[in-house]
Length: 555
Image: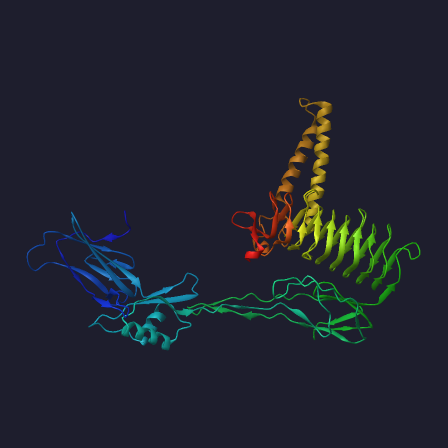
């Protein structure tokens, strides 16, 4: 079966109303060229014979971009283009099929228009650049046309007998998206460790701490977002751009922000503290030479603090600005509202550290770290739980043994695991707050399942008690809630949106070796490695909904 429509077979004679010719191009290739036909032009006509009736009836078949007249005796063109004629003989008679190869083609997204040109047939009117321009306009191509380029194509086609197929004559103009607002700093704030450099490597320079500012000094100027420019398709229709985001600026302590001028100034002398890229503090700096112990007691400061020594077990440090610790944090509690730099490490099961900005340290052995920004690990992390809303970066020679590393964005690590240590969990594209909620739900589920087990041991399966039914329903509901919980940041916690767009740029990169048994998680998808890998990058395949690996050396 085909989709062609035919005329009623009659004892008629077909008259071909367009011309063809055999030509040879400059490369000595021969082909058939056709006369260009216009829309609604007659292509084939069936007429009654003036002489004897033909022995075989003729059946007229209209193909793509053609149609039959009302009396079904004339074949008409539906578009401007080149007619392709084919004749077949069958037991029932002669078949004539005509299709039109379009002169003009427009992409589905209307961002590209192309033409196909056959060399002119001798004796037929030649296509001029003015007429071609008119035809293109009539077909909806009204942007990006060049009469000079069209004329050059026609000349080449005519003089070289060249067949030009699907040659682009117009392209749409992509929209220019707006730029997000940002802060242009008037002072040198130093490098931000963990930033991606132009060569694809990570910047691991030390953060510049305690940048001094004078009273009234301009710190930065907020550059507003731009709207961008809309795009144009080949039909001249506009389509919208994505405007830049107007990211809010927050200041605190001795910093002021003039929203009208966009200027951020220091109200008093102090040191600068940046939490993220759009939150600025100016506060006093305090220096503590030595350890945090019974001689100092717990530390509470509304400024920035530099501690030369170590924070001893059981002591608490609560800092409103940046904190630079020269020694270690040993089974201590740290709450830092700025950025944290530890020259030593974080040690001990009971060590709990929370940081609003970014955290940069040499090593971590056990303990818990919760960071709103990025994390830099310079040497190692053993049996530690590190959760960050930003990225986690390690130097290439670093070592991660067991524990949990969880990032709202990507992980960039050195070596992970060993042949004899418990497996680590590496999670990227996971909202730490939601994961903690998941752990809480899982712990509650275990308690309820243990309660059900004790209930069954006491009363058995046969005894129907309302408490048992209520317990079973609660367990079932909790299972359903855990299954629906979406861990991907910037999506609804219970939405069906899997965060495909967010996760498209999220990776777990291993510059050294990662050992068999390590558990990986990207978004809501998990995978346990069944072999060792070296120099590998893990990402999420959105089509398979699975974690896949690729070799870094091939990138």
